[in-house]
Length: 262
Ligand code: PEP
Image (cartoon, rainbow, N blue to C red):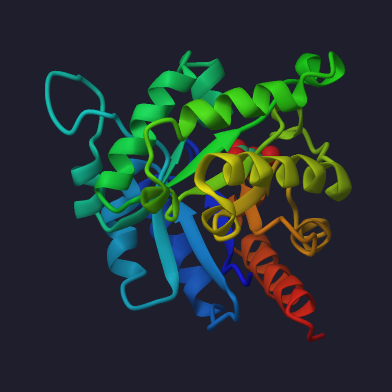
């Protein structure tokens, strides 16, 4: 199955509106149509309106970094799916390890967020991944399975078609110590098998599964060229337009290799 690849940037809590706008200008100046992939940028909420305008009628898609599972109400400081839809988002990251560990988000809450996003036709980028101690205790599959199955607990097979999963080992995030492509492929193949048991082979083979954790222009090709890895979720290296563009170019090169070309 040919899956459209994704190069997604997660800016986290970086860039003011002015900085985001300058980035978009620099990025678009060197942007062209890329084959076989989608480029997604997930800025802070405050930069969404300006980027929606700057990326209008370009191949760059917008994503957000979080959402609440309710669509309105007394939830001070939160943002809803219809609000993000109105701001032009196509994707929303949920269950990022920083949200799970710093803000104590549970897999159950993540599951409700995923459900709400799908009912608003927003694609969740559902992050799963083990900590170093869990990996060392041989619990990688157990942890990933729990986060994954609770994350998709309320979805129908039809809704699951818009899902994107990001496998992000916590020990690899922001550390400069990426997983090996082979280890990432192995966990991601396991994720696809779990999705197949839950939603059927056909749906599972269409779901994009990304790798995230210290992705850089130098290593992205080796990840994306793996059979089950459909792109990357990039933190630090997405903050620099030149580096992120290089990641996009390398993702296209991996697409061409996978589709039997160069
Ligand atoms: C992330 O935060 O999702 C991430 C993968 O960060 P980094 O690329 O900096 O490791």
